Image (cartoon, rainbow, N blue to C red; front, side, top):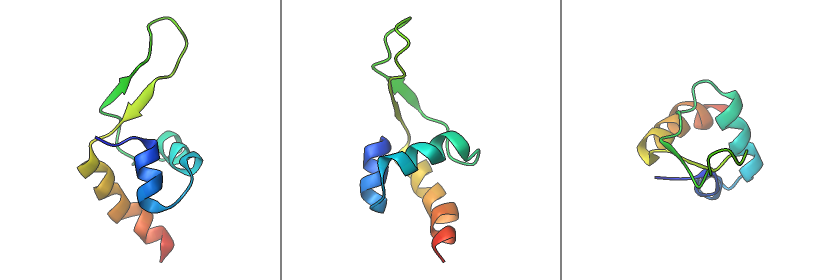
Length: 67
């Protein structure tokens, strides 16, 4: 599993850029789980993804943008 910080570190970009993709790019994989989100607190929690799904998205979409 990977979080936004892990993805940002891997790609050497900001956490904000990764967060934007996760919310605005419909092709970005859905989170596997949201952890540490207390019920009724309004807190968002921490989203985590399957690493292999994120890696596949990176190969297909992120690398293409950089060419």
